Length: 525
Image (cartoon, rainbow, N blue to C red; front, side):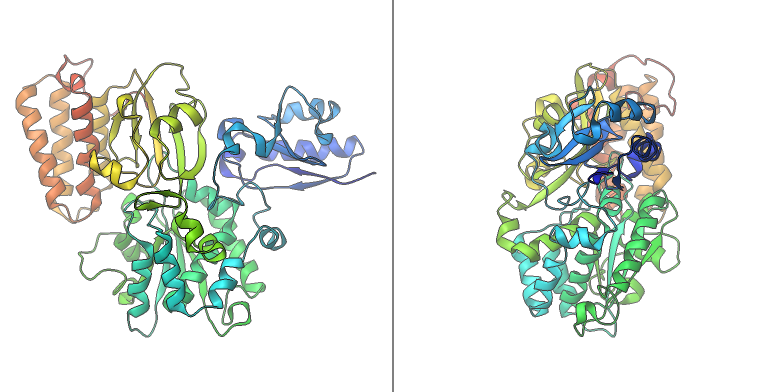
């Protein structure tokens, strides 16, 4: 039979949706027919989603990539020497030298696409558990100081310093404390949480265990949106393995430190991306925003002190404890330290995951990595930070991805989602979509959000119809001011951001004659 060749085919949901499972079966069948013995590994995605299904072959010179590969092309590719790393019409060369990956600085995603997500041997061989072992050798207070010193801020959107939150929970007195990971990734154009959970679940488990040790928590929950069944299955299997290996349970890695972890599945409510709504849902209640104070760090899940962090925040923790706060602090600019996992989506030629230090410009991401629009038409607008983020025109492409620089122009980095639109987009309709989205997803607890979004949608409908445009523009701005100042949480408070940015940067779309009657269709998306 000769030597065994290792072949990687992603098990990521995005890859599966375009035929990765069928490609894996075809490779196994074709290799057997050719008398070749292979070790087929179902890894996570490398993040080059326009090339999925992406097949990698281990050679004496490293891994060689081929893509996109269809199942009915596998026989020809194997005959052409794919299992030996030969150059074919699908060959992309050595994976790590691909222009998309070559200059990235993968920290949170260092192992995603590289390892078998459920192999503990792969995980440890690629640096896994170093952070947890280092943490357990320190007093909890020192672990918290490492997180503070790293400058890590919450990647879920708010950008609050993670270490300060941990310090508050550590100092709180209670019979039990919790660590909750909010994986209710509902922002449009975001998929990094899912890809990490599917491609490297042990990183999240390790990060949560470190957080638990640092704050005195003994129980944890990962709250995953119901639309992510593959992530849920992968996490549950990874947790089973972690318990069997002594990474979770009553004695973490043989130390007198208990931590128990479980997965909870949400019911599809966008509002549960907000931390207190998520906590309500975890308690078995309807997901509705809580008034603050008290903050969750003091009175969170079941009224106990609770660390609530996003997947990418907790996924950054193992590297910080493995390599030290200064190593993480060495990335980024200003008060935005470390790396961010940017997600390119929408009308984009090359969509996927880009992890780089804060400070990269919007233009470098959209035109450099993304390659412009998929339609080939000029980019007109980019929305950064999810459905509540600002719409930015191309003359703002010199903006650096930095919390403070974005805030200074009325925008936000958010969860790192970047959605691109070409010059056919109608920005008045995009503003309408923001109000419509809020009207549908509002928990209904506060009047400015519940009623303001409905009135905002109605007002924009009148503007689109050309009815008293000038007067209705005044009403729209007043509604936006009221929602910003009066809403209980960011759902209503941030909905005016995309609306006002569309008005500011694309005023002609609100002043022109109507193109058609108002509808629920979002143009250009």
